[in-house]
Length: 183
Image (cartoon, rainbow, N blue to C red; front, side):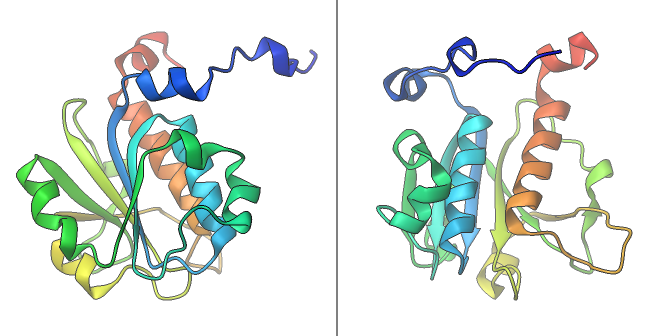
């Protein structure tokens, strides 16, 4: 076994990335306080070809050196928009067929393993503040809540870990090519 060289990874240019068909997934970052987490969310979203990121409330936005440090250029590839509250985009999202799914522990959360999206469904996944979780506005807007099972003494993941888990799970459950290969 040997590591793949960077030149063998077949990375595409940002201009090519912008032309690629994106997955019907939106990420909503609801009042994140860490700029490094915001940058990491951009980077992970780029890897999964998500359609757009909404930066809500106190969430920092590009250009910002702390975001850029972890985004590694993904702020240039991913479409993003700042909004003051999720309620400002809720109607537009729902009118356009998007389901708003919180990634949060609530009294109605479903375990991620029981979350079974169809490949033609459009999801906007909401990830909340590192300490307080999603906002009350997000709770009011949500169609469902998904909870990632945890088995240790801590009952939360870092937002960037949660984002990676949820986007990977969604990709696995909705991508036919991936299912056919049995990977």
